[in-house]
Image 1 (spheres, rainbow, N blue to C red):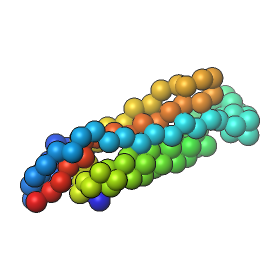
Image 2 (cartoon, one colour):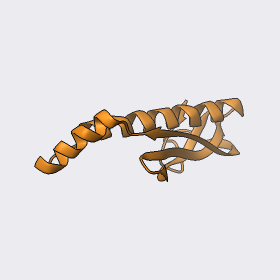
Image 3 (cartoon, helix red, strand yellow):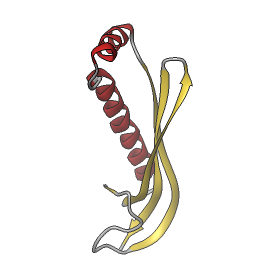
Length: 104
């Protein structure tokens, strides 16, 4: 299934708009990552453990959004956006959402 951040898909025509679809996941940090991140914060540089955690969260949210789109018969999702918010101390939600469409 196509998913894009643009309003249209190149060389394809949208025949029907089905509505908003979304997928989210809530992930929490763990003590091992926090200890390593604390050390990395002292010396500087990328905190790769958190980068990996966010990448996994993004992929899970995309998969759930596409599953939502498929369940209503969509061929693609346009205008895909991401949002993240802190749910509680040490846990954040990653949300992917967009507009499900049928293509000609």
